Length: 283
Ligand code: SF4
Image (cartoon, rainbow, N blue to C red; front, top):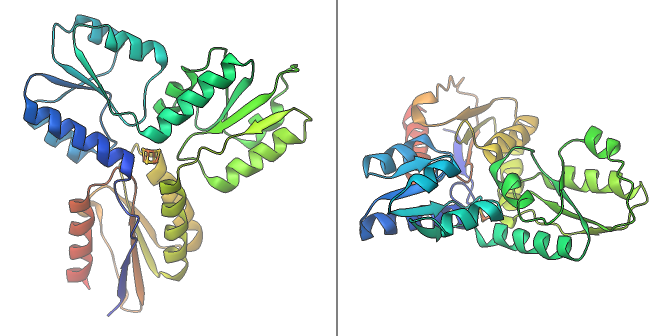
């Protein structure tokens, strides 16, 4: 009978839990509730909220059209202009931006005001990165790959203030920072990778290294879950990336000694428990 090891860090992190709790608290208070973008990258949770009357809005125009209600800003945060637009709308604004992301907004705002050039190491186009960009007073640059770091060639005397998307891979961040350093810029590095991500990635790697089968549970669009999969796949060839128990089709050989389970920051506890129970009965 294989041993099943579930990562302690699997599932909601502090910031996501806080944002989800905020939505349920607002539902209990009553009135029309909107989230700016899905509150988390998890279809099950978003569906449950929809059934409870929570609507997802996606554009500033939709905010302007609201007559009343509450707009909740999710843990990823939003650009400053958008935050102002929500706050000055007819709807009430509840800011559930994760405090760790808020700290990056504050750093970026302060350092760009001092004249630093802001460089964000992260996935361009990710809502968190777009939010961070929107707090810089001057145009920020997003760097995601070695090639982009190598091609960065801004002629400036200004200090580069380098921050990271909270879910970025630690080693890759260091690698990209080193490439920028070699170019002779004056650099201030603020490593804003969140501990929750780091711990989750390290624990996943440790478990995958000893597992015969590794299961990563996460939303299709969740970048931190995709990264977990990438990390686990490197350690364990038989790594499965699933959204819910229904996606899981383990064909065990009977030789497996360890089955590992981890989950991205947007995976609710009940889904993790369902997968655990399923794996146990499947053995
Ligand atoms: Fe906040 Fe970290 Fe969770 Fe991002 S991963 S929401 S920064 S606790």
